[in-house]
Length: 192
Image (cartoon, rainbow, N blue to C red; front, side, top):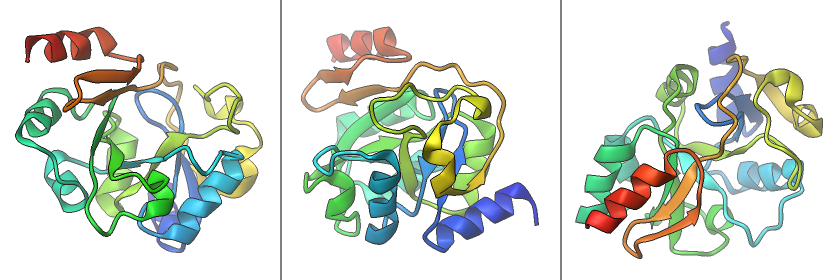
């Protein structure tokens, strides 16, 4: 069994996995399984009123879990995969625990080969940094903190860029968190 097989099997069993992205290392679990999502909150020590994003392998798959507007679809094709988390209306199967009861969910399509290979085997998974809340994000496996005690599998993907994703609400025309590619996102929003 490869590490990817083990990671996919762990997620399918409701367990947590650490995986690399083009930004920082992420903590993955079955994003549709409320108990698995709850385990992510527990591992991170994260407030339950702070939503967690979900990751999918491509824009077509995103449509299974989200209901993007025309402008959001255009944005998606322009910036994803990439270091951007876009807020988009969720579909019914996306659990409240993931979104903290909100109607929107953060959508992430990472631009990292290993992450995409994992997502090709199991999706959607949670897309949140693999760190205890309030601690620095991990750029390397060696940087991972106590979070690894909660993870069944850690996928080694080398050193990541270390800058978090830009979080954007396309419909509102707002950037909620500036991160990687923020200037390009801002320019796109200004031209709309």
